[in-house]
Length: 249
Image (tube, rainbow, N blue to C red):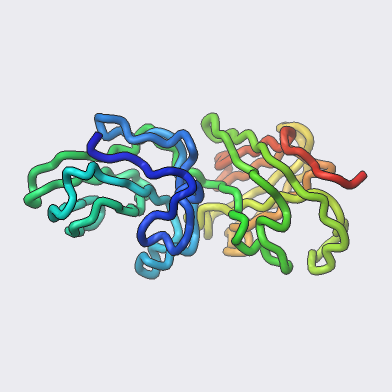
């Protein structure tokens, strides 16, 4: 294999301490043809990238050791040449492929993302703030989303939170998960529905989604199905009925 994805618990070069698992799902693969399968999570705050490119979808790639110390030219939206085996690449929304070449033009790998899922809604990591004085790790443990098209099945554990005084509205006790949305949805007509079924439920809308609508704390005690729409099209449906609610009554 010319290129592979690193182990989930490793920290890629230029990732600012983030783990591979924060960038891609465990089933993400680079096939021998260069086709990428699996899910690329939506990630924020990758500060090694220029301003304006620090949020989005990224893929860490490790090249075969036979390319060690060789100048490698990687071309996507931009072109960069370096003698690196480990790369962290930002994948554009239009899924522009990346080519890897020696001698600038001798292409040995082309990454194609047509079969990859660019996640529009992702779980906030344990270290990230969810606002209101808490982090993702304060609210939940080992929470992940498995996608089938735009429908995501959420698994893991929601901790029992009591007396969350900073939360702006009641109830301040219960079980919560936090998700973040792709910021490309900002400025568009946006709606959010919560309920116990996909039909009906309580809906809220915004004619122009702002940055404060890119982070959601979802209370699971009465609702377990959540739908996000942009310009009337479903961005994601989250089925949280399989989340374990820890402790509490």
